[in-house]
Image (cartoon, rainbow, N blue to C red; front, side, top):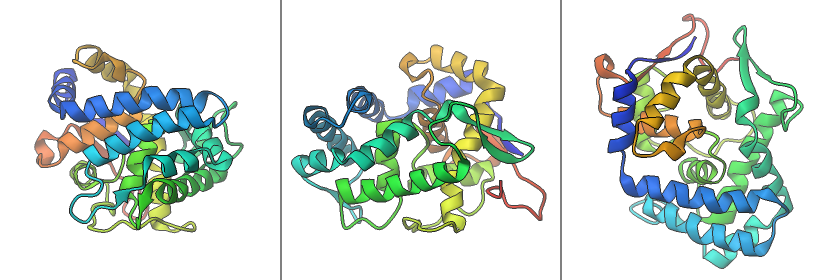
Length: 263
């Protein structure tokens, strides 16, 4: 069970190179400022710089357009990013990916992980999305833009926008490609469909790291190396509109009696 890479190295490199160049620039710009913000205590100068670039990227990625929520002012976002609780959750989530693993179809955290249990990882992830929604966005109810903010700041996992959800559906991941994906609370199915995905990605990276790293090194964006949450975001985005026969990534589903996020 899990993701299988259907495309070869050249296909993955092409997907990276043909992904929107401005979106690449937005991501790397925010990640540089996020590194300074996450490195120490939540200082206002670092939060201010992050808020400027984060708000710009979210607007570039659709915030404030059509029915999408708009961004709060940069000053309001910077003050909110100084919240020690939010800062701590983002620090921990930014460090988490190398510690995620799947053993016998169960999620585990390797020794040294920022969280002592998988359940605490889940709670921190969902709490961070809710806090980011309040800190950065006006009248937000869906997961899309909080997940985009989480991706931009931490690089942890893809954001469930329409393109990525469509790409996941092409891969064979059920139950995500719906019009409205509300911010979840509790431990329901929508919560687990967010919390489990990074573990599936980590397991895929464990088995196909050389392929991913070679595709990145051959691309126009070698700085993507190690940014596997973002890499999958790009690949699912670019997979949208493909047919199953030309998918870049496929999902090997569990038995019919078991859901992909039950782990």
